[in-house]
Image 1 (cartoon, one colour):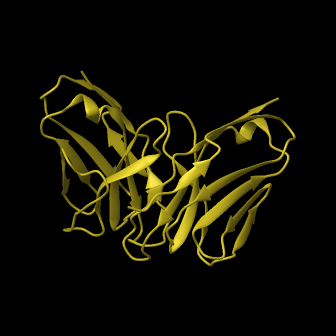
Image 2 (cartoon, chains in turn blue, brown):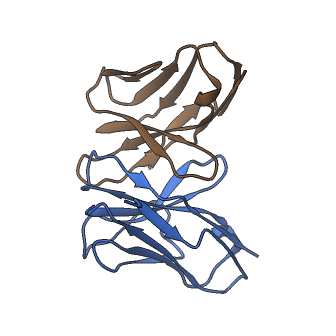
Image 3 (cartoon, one colour):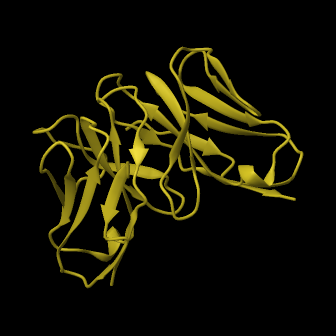
Amino acid sequence: NAGVTQTPKFQVLKTGQSMTLQCAQDMNHNSMYWYRQDPGMGLRLIYYSASEGTTDKGEVPNGYNVSRLNKREFSLRLESAAPSQTSVYFCASSALAGIYEQFFGPGTRLTVL
Amino acid sequence: TQLLEQSPQFLSIQEGENLTVYCNSSSVFSSLQWYRQEPGEGPVLLVTVVTGGEVKKLKRLTFQFGDARKDSSLHITAAQPGDTGLYLCAGAPSSNTGKLIFGQGTTLQVKP
């Protein structure tokens, strides 16, 4: 089992460009999450999907959109990238929404110039 | 907005020393988790505490959830270089959404 996989691992964008971060899990988990991690700020929840077919905003959703493509895949889209979106992005999944362990992917390091 | 304040943010100690990391909030959480993160990797769960006053031990690591479920601590006994990493506490405001609020993290360096 690969667990949670994310692509790409690194990306450099210019201001105004768009891109989609891909995430997939092979653990048959129902819930998936997107976080960003910035120095000194821990992880902040961007969007989450409690189950297939549902998505909800987290703490910092502005400038992002998500798609729960199927039970395995949850993508994060930046429509018009800004320097403030320079960060490390982590995808996570858990068996169910609730007090369950979240399994994290290896992260995508994004730089917006 | 619920916040979790972690302290200290940085800790550099010698092998064999003991240390405690604190995670505090003015809000009540239904549960609290501690994660450990290595450079270039995602966080990995160490423990989940659910009941106020709960104490869990994982080898040399002791985790405590405050009676009021607003704070938590992580104590490491006889730290080893392998304990080096970023420690993150994460609180769940609700028991049924999966949403987590993370603290800023504590970077621990254990020198041989």
